[in-house]
Image 1 (cartoon, rainbow, N blue to C red):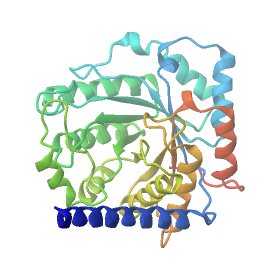
Image 2 (image 1 turned 180 degrees about the horizontal axis):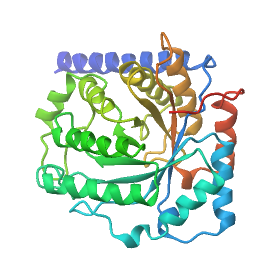
Image 3 (image 1 turned 135 degrees about the horizontal axis):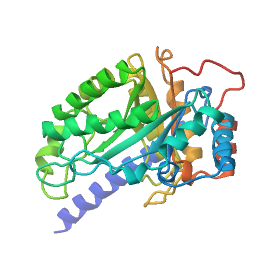
Length: 341
């Protein structure tokens, strides 16, 4: 028993030592100030009230000033969610037309995209069944309604999306045909990529998809490229880190920024999602850590990506004046530049 206890104690000490090395190494890596600055191509997720409720002209002007001041090029106005059949009741977006008119008056050049999504039905659980061709057809019909209202693009956020989801890729192909024919854009929000692609089959075996329990819906490199080839913009939901220190959370943002841009930065515009809300596990994640981490990730690139890139702020309704000021000071470059994307 004593021998067994010693083995256990040595094993625990070994594991704790490894953890300490990781924590100390991450802290040391985190200390230097990032060299890279941010960009003038940035996105913002905006609340549903902009399309669902009435607003005064002053409120529209204030929104436009916020977008201009912070160099936001794309706003994802929540306009859904989809019903199970792929439709959105008109009452949910009854003021969308007024919003679009106001955006054209006060924020010309800023793309207003219809942010649409739903919980993806998987193995009988969820709401919208994208495996059903009829549902995908009605989603496209709904997209046409929002494009007719004047939205500059469609922004999809279906969750979960697994790297074997061919129906989602089919929907992207057909949606992009629609948006391109009208001179609009298609953007997609995706979970952060896998850390190791080979781990995905292991997760799938250990955590089978049934009920409300699923293995992590992380795109593999191959699937992320497939999505990027079918979308004009990809926004990576890098937030919800739940790591205990700023340096570890910052490493998370840096690692995903570098890997994502290396994988698809030459194929499509990329927004790295950064949070201004407090996550459920309120440890070390905030806008300051996220932006610093993204910049550290940019430092690690051998060359800039060929396509535009920036951050996507989640969300408009949780960002206060102090956070906007920090974003401008730490992210926006001092000189004006190309804001196309």
